[in-house]
Image 1 (spheres, rainbow, N blue to C red):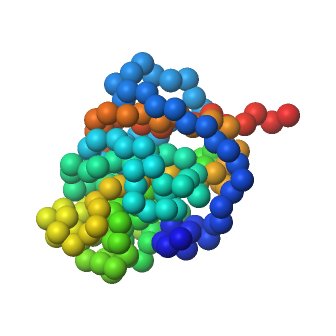
Image 2 (image 1 turned 135 degrees about the vertical axis):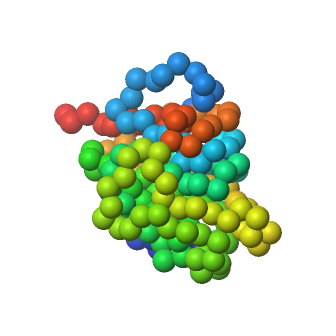
Length: 186
């Protein structure tokens, strides 16, 4: 199961989140939490990510992006709660308790940080759109199986009821791409 489960120390959850697609430029959706694109590009469903932990939604729901820019940004306001030692992934913990993981590429762990420049440290506060990782697309595009960037709302960090994700083109930090409704207390 690789780096995502190691980073987050999580196993498969039995929650059955629901997701549907909408166009990225559609009318705003009323939700408890809105996440924004972590990188410029084209949105893809998680099923298209060639990493079983992501594609099978082991950790949670979200979207993937075929990146068209080098800067990966914070998808929401929060605190950087985790950074992979290989600099290709990070998590932001939101005030609501939800943790959002963003990871770049497939087989990028083997790069051991080469091609990635961090702009933050664990514990740093970030605002939506703040640069977190700068990637060297030329180098990484030649060496990696895939440069797909995935963004997953970690289901074990919050009471997620429903996740709706967008499709289409997106702009880092500006395009809303995931809407999350939380379970209401009984």
